Length: 232
Length: 221
Image (cartoon, rainbow over all chains, first blue to last red; front, side):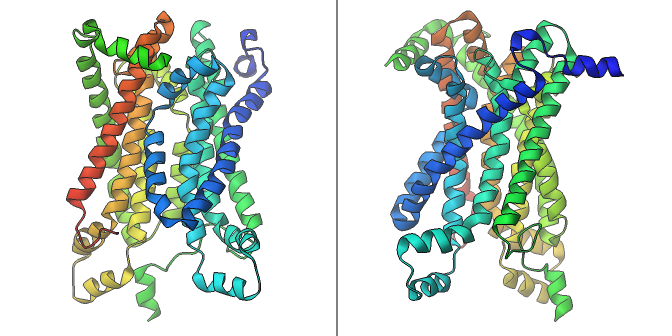
């Protein structure tokens, strides 16, 4: 058993990283694009909320971008960015953007007009109103989008293995085959899945911390019809 | 534009249009993988999503299952399944179905939950049977969202089925993976273009399906 565990974490030297090094690399390749996507999505979403006519074409364009497969996207970029980390990160940033724009627009639009009117009546300017009223109320929707973007980003980094071993933990899959060591495949899958679940849980925690006025757990819902009947 | 030249060279070469490695054959394989995986995922995700959404129970359990399903890396899973089960269709189908079930499951549940309760109550008050309420009242209203869940599942399958080529299966990914190994850039870019076009066609098909299937009273805008 202990010998098996030793093999499990014995990373071949051609990867030039320890297990923890691969995890760090994987997180960097997955999370930097999501952060970049969020930075881009916030102003784009704000424009879409401000100018309503802008939203349908933006939504159409992003849906089309999302339809480009990651492997195809990576491969076409090689021509411009070479077989580097950047080639993996650019498509991931685009996918994050695509998931986040509708999430933020829906979140900001869900702010009740009375709340906005109250903020205006209290003398809030548009900028302050955005940062102190609209954005906080949109936090649950934004975090929901971030969760989907982050988890799929962590999963997709592995595909980077196919373009010059830029897949961080995914590179273990290649080594598992050339050295005939199946335990490395297990290592890659389990570590990547655990990483995704941990980051996801962290985002839920961030949401709970950022929205102290909401009940913990899932957002409150309308009671089920059966419950409504019982209450009558 | 380098890429455009490659695309032109790939598609104008008549050798790429025939035989077992020709575009029609590879396209057929890719469509076949996609349809099979989508049908399997829908057969799992739709009934569970419809029933749990109708009764409004089990939402937390569903989101847990969905998160776990999303967390599994498709590419890693594919290689793992091939190591365990050998080469074949099954090791390719498992990751594709695991990839596609969460979006179908979650959007179907959310779609059913977001149906306005008053017509449902009215139907129940008129003595409609629960199964008729589900299929004739809730389903038509929830349909646009359910279709959007199926659409994103289908697009993800089209995109991910390219990886099947890494474990010696066919499909359009063959051009990308083979091209990368042979350093035949023209082939790589041609394959990438074909997959992107197939994904866009899928998008268009779902748009058309929504136009046909969604009742005009439910359609927004």
